[in-house]
Length: 92
Image 1 (cartoon, rainbow, N blue to C red):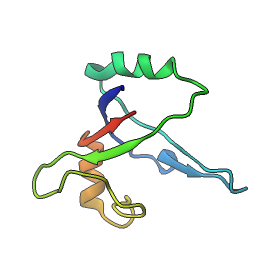
Image 2 (cartoon, rainbow, N blue to C red; image 1 turned 180 degrees about the horizontal axis):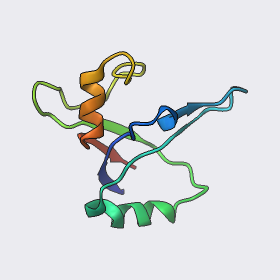
Image 3 (cartoon, rainbow, N blue to C red; image 1 turned 120 degrees about the horizontal axis):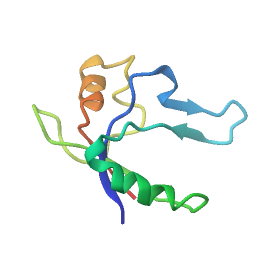
Image 4 (tube, rainbow, N blue to C red; image 1 turned 60 degrees about the horizontal axis):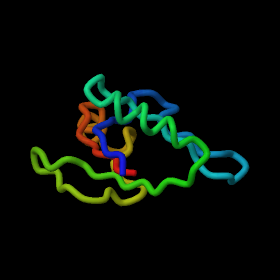
């Protein structure tokens, strides 16, 4: 298992949904302290990965899975700020 801290970048294309129904693409900002995990992740190209996203428990945010469709940058700016600050742990 590869585990590291990351955040969604503050860009419109952080999550891109395919126009032809073939899925989505997610971009992550990974801090310098987690680069070794990013290198390990890069070696898994082409493999099927299981992804679990947890928001770090801080300032009233519950840790655990984030329900699909919640906490978007458009819908909840406070949650988006937490994401940018690296309060997400990604496990693969």
